[in-house]
Length: 169
Image 1 (cartoon, rainbow, N blue to C red):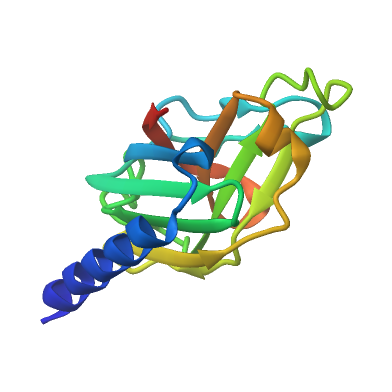
Image 2 (cartoon, rainbow, N blue to C red):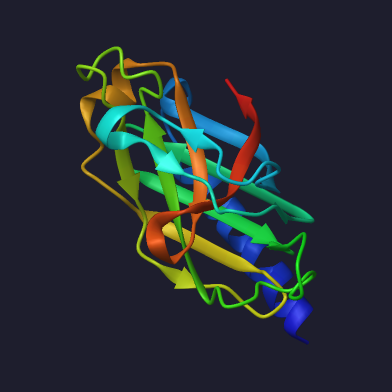
């Protein structure tokens, strides 16, 4: 029953956001969500740099989409769990996550600083599943003007544990 509810929620959210994203040129998508492979990895620069969790994580699937014009964002992740240590295969102590856009990852437009935009924190199930759809914003100019943008999933302590993969466009 939980799987049916999760699948239905994801399908409805995807359908809703597919129809609500009107400016295709302003839409950025990541076709998958994966866990952090190398612990401690850094994304972004300067004051907008985000540190990775100290150890590896894995994810079984996911998707993220953001309309930079409207601020509509949707993401889901399944099976986001630790990939090492005594809590392997579980989210360990992580019970909430946030979706994060890191805009201008090289800091070229922001005086060496990337720009961070976060969703609210949402629950992460004991199986590593989370879904968010809503609005974030206002979207800062570096997200609109710079092509280098990353999507991360962060845990408490603001460390990232997963990221969007296979970005389009």
